[in-house]
Image (cartoon, rainbow, N blue to C red; front, top):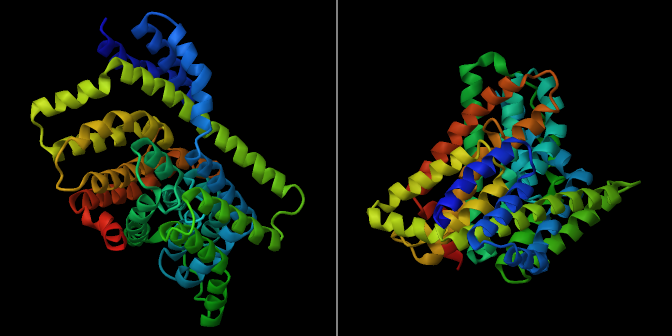
Length: 440
């Protein structure tokens, strides 16, 4: 069996291990370990790699941004910022048809701006918004589907942990990627709100109405979210204007949200220790996936699969847009069985060399940024598609009276919205790139 055949065979083996409920990081580590052994014929090289790879990988200064952004999200949740965001959005939108669900989407976008994690955004906003949606008579499928979709904004609205990983893999500027994600993130929020507006008109009995809040009340609720806006603008614009590096920005964001949570009384008792512990657990999970992907990708590189795939695509003469379409469809398919971080770590080292050699009329840096945002969007779709849509399971676990199938069906219109947005952003790269071109 050739090295290339071994590499191709490793993909179904990896999927079988994942379906057997083995942790994805461990599954990639095992496939990479034995793949290296089959290619080289001995264990010594891979054992030597495992001796040094964890140290060289986890001592990377760039990776320190991940636990800091996760800690920022923990402090934001403990400090009551999620509740303030939902109350403010609900004050302005809640009286409209489908308005409470729209308010939940808006609050998810606001919380995503200080969190960076999709699952954390979905879980936090689910606790806040789900009782209100039930109180005003929203259909269980619409309520859970909207919150699951809104949670995906956590990895699209900057700062985003997934974008940090992509920037490290492709050696791109994190600040430019954050800036490029702003407009697609706003479009995602508006697209979800439009989806809700259409849904409640097609099914009028799927939502209830609440009274319109007085203007003074709405202004008061809006004023309560100023800490969120302050942290977001300080972190994102501080990184953009060069006041501090992305890692320093993440540290400042974590310190800022921690201070706000402390002043709000959100860190009383064991809340501080709980925040640090949950951050450590999430960071450990992410780092295990990074380690597994590092071993697996070293095996793929050793087998020459990425280079052979890139050469084969060039020889076939496929158009760049056809190749891009196939890659995006592949991500949609992978999203049904894998989580977003694993997909990025597993596929970017293979797909990026393939598309980098194609002509899309963009400079190499602009292409890398545009391609990264497209990947981010299709990866987020995987969070709300069965059977492994993590956000769907997170939200459904909070709605005990809503069957899982209704949550799947409730998320379907939001998946359609994501696909339409992906087509638009793929067809018109300027939508993603104009802020980067204007400000850099």
